[in-house]
Length: 465
Image 1 (cartoon, rainbow, N blue to C red):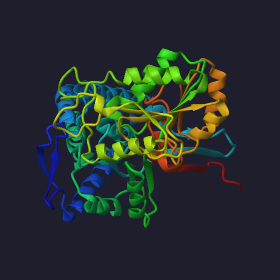
Image 2 (cartoon, helix red, strand yellow; image 1 turned 45 degrees about the horizontal axis):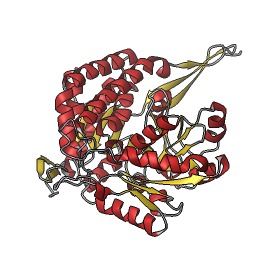
Image 3 (cartoon, one colour; image 1 turned 60 degrees about the vertical axis):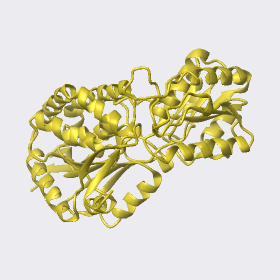
């Protein structure tokens, strides 16, 4: 990256896909002032009008589906069908948030008190900066952009340097939908200019999805200002497979939950704990399923796993696997067994059975197609090991006993707990985390409220004499 342009590398071809001009420090103020002007008008619109805009945005995005999906695959290597699926996910989340906005953002009237009228308003914050990640570049951005617009805010998107065209797609779809000028803007910026953007006095909220280190940097950048910051910083999400689970279903979904999108998901299954009575059988079936992945050109229909989006990721992941094996783990699926393209930033699936709980593979976020599996004696050991993590985004249990799932789930330190499901966001539920995963919430009623401020209306109508 030069001082004036961003070069985006296709992770499959390893060639420059395109270049874009970078926002310069002197232009930050203009971008924010434009957003502020758009906000001052937009905040006066009815929520029904905002929802109608977001539905027109959906229609525009649907019309751009093929182009957006193609560009997404070029930028970060996701298989084309998965890119198409991501567009579908964006549309579904937008529709849900638009459908609940009027009820969620309505004034909340308190019970009647003689001589008074009292209610709570949910007022927009102002200018929201969304710093979005590359791994699900449409879904991560939509979680903030659409709720922010529905809540009456203006939005500045600063997308990952790997996927800047995704930010442009949002702007273009809102333009086609008839959005006011500069209601949604996209900037391509380096770290220094992004810091200036966050520190601008005209910015009222920052949402960031990325690494823990990046989260600390965002907090430091905004520390001098009394604005709220939303953070989603990753996970090391555990799955617990009980003896009474639907065995084949649990195997298939725990594999898919680990390796979909080449394992590059904040809520991917990254460690699996299995009841000792079914452990050997589970490991064998899990390994057999993992071996079915096909690596190759992400534009081809037969490819089920594309390259890593980051050039340095394969070396980091290999070291995690090798360290787990040195510590006593068994490599039951070896990446060397796969046919791997001669070009591209690829790493084939790796499965380590008996991975020690204290090794990097079971403790540090991998963000790639590697997994550790460990036997447990029952619920108590599973709970202890699942909670043994600095992260807390999601966790899952695989069982036929819903009471057991509730008992276990209520003791797991996590933002979302699943039974017989994983690696999925329901837009009706808040997307949130604990510990080093971050703070705040997106999606659901809580995500809308997170992008508003409360105002108490306390009106005395009967003046005593």
